[in-house]
Image (cartoon, rainbow, N blue to C red; front, top):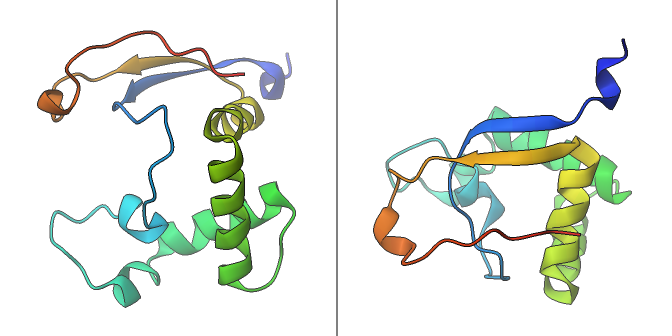
Length: 115
């Protein structure tokens, strides 16, 4: 059996916006509970690895700014399509959402179908 073709079920994730909102990727990926300086966040292993993988996914190689600019353009153009393409590439089929994290930010829930 080739597991690369199996759909993925994320068995623990948190709610995220289904509409575009500008966010700094380094801050988004931070595992710190502290307000770390951006220059430190942009040099973490998690961020550096994610940026490389994102560049590969987007077909953009070279400067960090070029990768981030392409990401921003795609998110602004069609956020749902962008997120859907990430889910498709990772073969994410189902999300099991932990509602205990900042539930006040989510006054209602509805299933969001991404392309």
